[in-house]
Length: 409
Image (tube, rainbow, N blue to C red; front, side):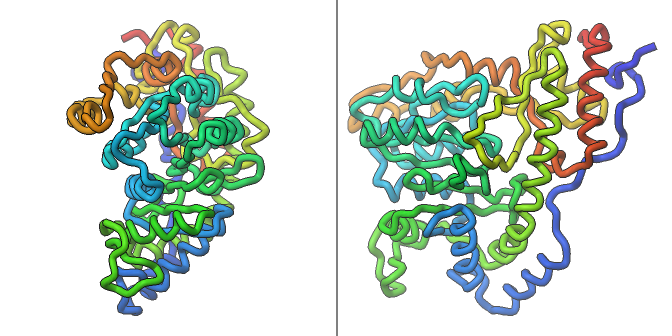
């Protein structure tokens, strides 16, 4: 008789993990406050309050609230003057917006490999890719884990490059006690519906540079100046403005973030300890320089050889059957994505660039292993569960390994 739920056996659990998003009467009251203010869209008091509080939370002087994390990245790039003829080095193990934001400003994404033990951008790979066209490094604090900012800051200083931090999964995460986003020149955050602090959509730009703040503010608000008149337009800006309703929700969500983050970190530490004892399962390497990790995702590495050669897709299918909603994560590197062909003429072979990028020739072994073979995710809401919930995750993996003969397709 089969034991794995995948084959008809009894699953480890039949109850859901904590729901997301988390909300209560405080959000309703905040929305009522926004509604009754009569200022629903443009630069209301709640948006200004959120910008001030969130920037301070990230140890930054300035914040600009925008429509999404994608918009935050694009506006950040524009504020730095990055555009035609410039190269920006990024990792390919990330959401597509990291690359498309670069392409939208007519710059060239250059893909660096990731560190195989942390899944963040590999500084050695970054350094090997710098050319006379390189203008910036765009590290991603993937899953909430800060990239190696010591090495990246050193490389940027040595080569006179900007650093734009993609912190869209890293609210409150810290590198050596400094919160990410404004460790480099400028940083971007997302408040999309799956994120640890959410209002459905939305984003934030943070920086400690007042000149960059003024430029980002102008670019997100139709080119206006924060110090000028309403119909004075100093830059060719767009409309990337957050609404008062979004700001109202986020102000309440921010109040819960520290407590939720501590719970995620505590459960992640517990999983690290338990999973590291299972053959073929490796949590990402811990680094004492990462003093706080928001854990938008809990990523672990899967070795098919320890599970009878079963693919990570098959393993994830078996986990889901046991009641554990494991995700296979990014299934291909960004340089393999179909959308890149739409940029083949400009900017990828633009005369202004003077070169031609052929992503079909890019092969980054650590990234490809993460995508195709080993990278598996647990979502942040699962880490808000109980110790019993974490034990169910461990038990499901152990059960699958003990009955690996049933994993066959």
